[in-house]
Image (cartoon, rainbow, N blue to C red; front, side, top):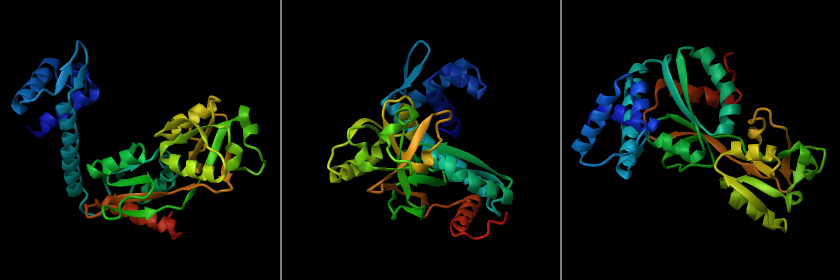
Length: 299
């Protein structure tokens, strides 16, 4: 199995269709279909369940997809390392980030970085913390911005300031969040339908019990975007990091910082310990560290 086989296989796996993959790869459909069958014969396993228009990966196919992504990611990193061996003034910097950080933390740093290194392009991957860690582990990104702490034996990190959690609710239900000082006591959420990120479940339940009530959780999600959308649809109160404010364009939401007790979440910039970092990645981390320390950004 060579690099071309891996690229062709991944195109079919990602598109879910031989026809769509052939268009993406700019090759004819019959040769691509034939090549996939030959690949199965060489490997001695069935990679696809074939339908009339779509194909679906078998268990063996999903395993091969994972391995091919790892190998191609490592190969692309090796090529990039050679191209950017000098001063990191060109090439592509791959960063994985949780959604809210991608909208609030990265833009300001990226603007200053672009002023210094205009030849560097960015490739951004968004997802939840588990997804970002997976991308780091397989070499698809060099730097991640995640929620919650990571294993210090495997990852180096720059911890970001703690961020308060806020309650977000449709303005039709703004009366649920009493008070005009942009804060709401946790006990005021007793009996309210709550929409939460799955990662905050244990913390939220623990604090609510300390306040004398069991939270009424009607929805848990791995992403803040649907939680905010549901709050905007008047389904309940979303509990999200403060940086998530404004992530849903056109939403009509009221926000209050949760206080008494004050609930916070942590985040960090992380990268794999011991793995080679491109010059562009090292420059980005150096700039990020300088900006966090309040040093002149060189604008």
